[in-house]
Structures are given as C-alpha cells and as structure tokens.
Image 1 (cartoon, rainbow, N blue to C red):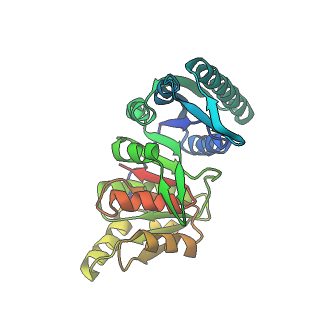
Image 2 (cartoon, one colour; image 1 turned 90 degrees about the vertical axis):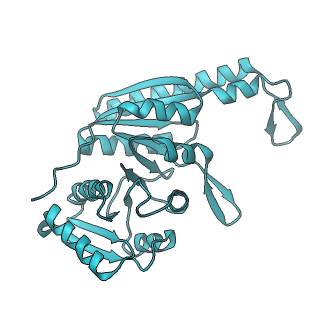
Length: 280
C-alpha cells in the first residue's frame, strides 16, 4: 500500500538584510504554490545588533576611513526601519505579481532563537544560507548552525540565488523521517518527468535489500524513473558527487542523525549550492 502523501500546510519564510531576499522569496512562493500552503514571511530585527550599537566604542568599518564611523542606537533604529519598509514593499509586490496571499510580520530579538520560537506553529521553515568564506573552505554561519540544531519543524536551507528546481535527490535509511523525505521527493519528482534519485546508505547486502523492498512497498514506483545509488561510505563528499553526477537541483534529507551527523549536514549545505530540505 502506498504511503500517504506528506502535507505541508504552513510555510514560514525568513527574510534578512541581504540582497538575495527576492530570490529567497521566489523560492518560497514556488514551494507554497506547489504544496498549496499558507505562506508567512518574517523579518527579525536583530536585538543583538541594536544592543551593540549602544556601546560607546561601536564603530562601522568604512573603506577609506582608517578609524571607521561611529554607530549609535538611533542611527541603527533608522536603518532597521528602512530595511523593514523595503521588505514590506517587496513582499506586497511579490504577492500581487504571483496572485498569492502572503502575511508579513516583524519581530525583534535574537535572530536564531526568535526564528525557532516563531516556527513552532509551522510545518516548514525556509532560511537563506549564511556562509562564511574561509580560504578554500566554507563554513555555515552561526545563525544557520543554531537553527539547524534547534528547530522542531521541517527546515529548508536555500543557497542565495538558488531556485526550486529538478531533478530531485533524496536519501532513504528506513526511518520515519526518511520515509517523509522520499514521499515529498516523489511529489516533487512528478513535475520533472518522474525522475528521482534515491541515495541509499553504506550498508550490508541484506539491509540494502530491505531498504529496496521498503521503497517498493511504500511508493508506487512503477510511475517513476527511480535511480538508486548505494554509497560506499556515508560521507558529505559522496553525496556531493551524486548531486553532481545526476545534476541534482534540490536535496531532501532526514533531519535526524541516522544518516549524517550534524557536522556532516553543515558541511553539506556549506558546499552544495542547491536548496536542502531536512525532514523531521
């Protein structure tokens, strides 16, 4: 018997101060339209930034000014209000152009903690990836790391500028979360000529056959063009190679640690320039 379709009824999308908000918003609208979800957009005014501006020694580094420029709380408040106004107009314009209802809310607080609290009543939280360039390696920013480790709903981490596209790549370990991931991937794959790539973890032959049978039992795979890829070891590098080999454009994974550790997931989203959705 085929598994019941995974539902995502409420989506919360977090905008920030970056120039990539238009792309992130477009991706959120794509997902909301596909799943027929209610879309809420949230901008969090960073209380930590405002507190820092109140310190007497706070300075903004400006190119050409050796001592920088003094920052004050009033100036920071004006800057934040201008940002909020711009985002409100951006959301209203996107809603009108796409003929979709989008609620826009503003909260103030610690960004990561407030995001996790606000997402308690939603099914999917969408955030943009904040990555730090460090030589040849990239690390996920502290807000992204904190949200990944604390959020209780499904989480989509978007590379700035990326779109929700196909082919779909997912993984299956037999856990309930990985069943949801494949269910969602099947739904998305139907819009891409039924093409779906399923990664199976490094395991023995008996477990591999059990996973293969579970996929056949839970999903109507006759209607899909499924490619099963069995890893030789459960590593970030191998998953990245699968994405590259099959030109994957979106990756769905379980959020638990049955397959990848927290550090491996962080490394994956730091290096994969495609949206990654983690399913609970």
